[in-house]
Length: 169
Image (tube, rainbow, N blue to C red; front, top):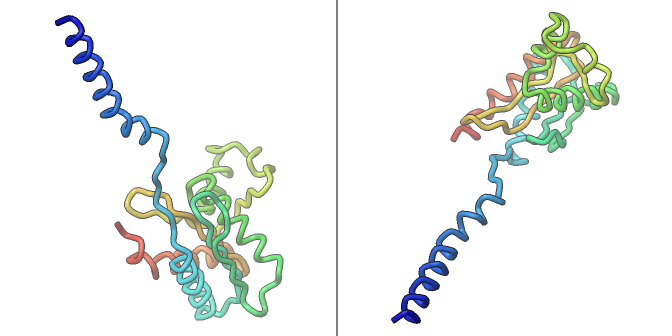
């Protein structure tokens, strides 16, 4: 009888280990939402078209949730340096999870340390907008080249609004 009890206990222990194995494996996996490249392209084109309609030549960069560029567009008369500025705005937006106009204002008001401005890649100029949907951070868009960050930001927001229905979940 004792041998049978040991076998049953062993069987129960093995069954428990097998039942818990998927749960432990799942602990090592991270799932997140990601902005599809086609949607990023549509967003960039929409931002570019809005600025053209407003009379501005701009550069636009759409980055993924990690700050890596997915799409870069530059209108024909926009200085090449505008791409770097747009990329910096998108990166700053995603890194600090806020629109760059809000980030710049928080630095000015002293709510965020001014020392952050000197960090590599930080671009505290209006025109970077966070892309969020369904409680998930999807990426950011940066626009540069219009005469003023407020105009850059308006084009970036127009791009996000144009594709909003494509990433609501």
